[in-house]
Image (cartoon, rainbow, N blue to C red; front, side, top):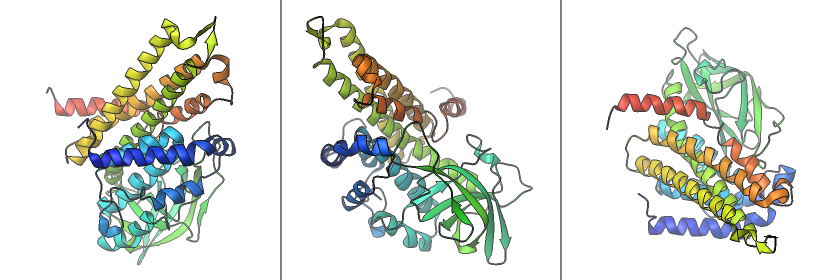
Length: 383
């Protein structure tokens, strides 16, 4: 569970080498401009980082989920937006199709994900349905051989570059709010599908989150994803996997912050000594390292359980909550160790702090994770 396989070590090494050579030199510039890293993403496609866990017959790598999680962690050490892009494509979008799509749908869309021709987005969040996804109001009305979708989506990551969207809409207006929701595969160039201006964010620069307005968007009935009225339960399964990705991204950010703090402490002098020689600084570094390692172990455990085909809902929420919290705490301490310089744009630690906060909100806020963890504990009973 804890030891990396040879394949996973190779993935880690390849991702780390890529980050050092291709990402770190341009990370500050991309963050400042909030620019989608198109060239970097194309290179990641060429290296096989998209569709890593998909079957080879669809152009994927056929790897274990843990291998993918290792890649997300390493890429996020260089730039958190790469972890986000990986998560949206390899988990939210790809797993939705793999788990619930027909064979025709898989053959149509998955190869184009792996070769980078058509990326997707996961359109579920709405202005009044964030944590409470069962309250979505977007409607899908059957009209002959088509569904007509109308509504508003919010904070949809990669909507501005996606050519396909997994859109969740209510197909049964009279059903209980947890029922009556369905998922659809929608081409983003469809008439009435409008991606609006990206929302300016505190961190996570380089990948945009946009509102989507759907006005009488016609979708062929063949583009229904999974069973009609089962979309809510499909989303829960995919989001549980996504939380492991968020945890891995958070671990990557935390590790980057720790690395920066260690490096700076060995260069900065005060009172005639390197600050790494001060006991208070050493204690901070030790606490930071312990936090990063606990977050990593929780994340690897959740990925291992998923690979083993075991129930991982509890562990995924634990990993997501703990790792995102740790990333923020470690990034904050890294700023403290840098002193006044840590509060400036000159050093990367302020970026790590901004990026870390996002993990406590995405894929279900940490408050929601507490509820999930408690529910799972009560359901499982005493071990």
